[in-house]
Amino acid sequence: MAWDFETDPEFQKKLDWMEEFVREKVEPLGLLGIHPYDVKNLRRNELVRPLQQEVKDRGLWACHLGPELGGQGYGQVKLGLMNEILGGASFAPIVFGCQAPDTGNAEIIAHYGTPEQKTRYLAPLLANEIVSAFSMTEPQGGSDPTSFITTATRDDEGWTINGEKWFSTNGKWAEFLIVMAVTDPDAPRHERMSMFIVPVDTPGVEIVRNVGVYGQEQGSESYIRYTDVRVPADHLLGERGGAFAISQTRLGGGRVHHAMRTVGNCRRLLDAMSRRAVSRKTRTGTIGDYQAVQMQIADSYIELEQFKLFVLKTAWMIDKHQDYRKVRKDIAAIKALMPKVYRDIAQRCIHIHGSLGVSNEMPFVGSLIGAMVMGIADGPTEVHKVTVARQHLRQYRDVADPIFPDYSLIERRARAQDMYDPVEELVEAAE
Image 1 (cartoon, rainbow, N blue to C red):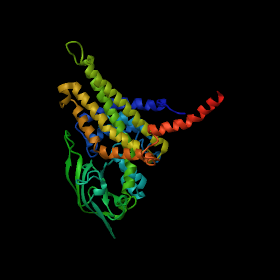
Image 2 (cartoon, one colour):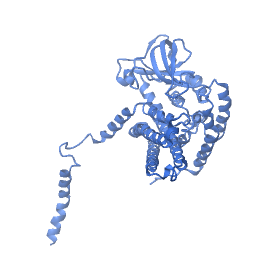
Image 3 (cartoon, rainbow, N blue to C red):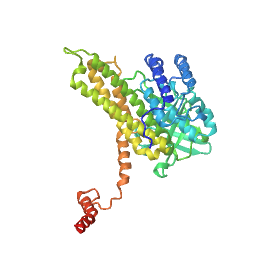
């Protein structure tokens, strides 16, 4: 039986190098006022390209991809441990070639794209020469695709797309968009929609505005209007009506990576509040001497370790089964748990820092907003909890007797009586 919590020594060396590299060379980039995704910014490229080359020289570039695409083909456990390190630095995913949403978009083009699509879009995307956006959510539809109204209609020459999309992350810098649109409104629910690759400079594509998450200096969540946007027939991604299956390909592993990056963020918050606790002086010592602060430190440590183990167990299950559907319940569970753990630890960190914690001299309020984003992005927490409950209840559907179920005391006593009556008869006979 294999049950091990140790990391392979050779891989641990890679993690140790990553930890120092990210802390010393990558984290400072986030303080320069340059956006990681602005690939046309010469200063950004001057700083980022050499770091990306260092990562490539170490064999740690785009490790989620198979060797045929220039990666290592790592499983989810290794990727999870790597993403824990990458979580605390805004430039780290870009430097290591594993930034969202480009990773998910690259994955679905690799799986479903034609040779021409891979040459034109996948190759430069993997090299971080360009970035992309996933244009799915709609203003009136939120994260429920069954209410989407953006359409793509077919004629002899190709497709015409009309509609609006909301919160298409990094649309302002994207070279192309992957658009989810209704192609067959009368088909079964999960076969109504298709995906298209749409170059951002296609006539009719209008970025209405770029929305910023509260506290950001510049918005990067694009509100996009598609008005009679014409794309060739060969820009359909995958099969017609296959958007739901394609979207699940990009979301499963990505949620594990988001969760482990959240672990990394929470570890930095715990580190910050612990340093504050032992350094902030009071009349009798430090605030860390007070039980009220100790309780907050303890709760944060316990919740963080529990969450990390749950995420890594889920990653291990994905590696074991090689089928996201078999791990769907646990993937949904870590996604539902993630914002709560993140929010609670961030709130405690802010509180322990006092007025400094709520100021713009510390990044902690940004973490609190980030926790709220995690409760909405990739599906709201409530949706994931419903998935957990439904998946869990499937194994209990065939209850033999709903009036006296087999876990009731009456049923269990009856079974115990049946089990031990013969023993009592043998004892009486012996006497």
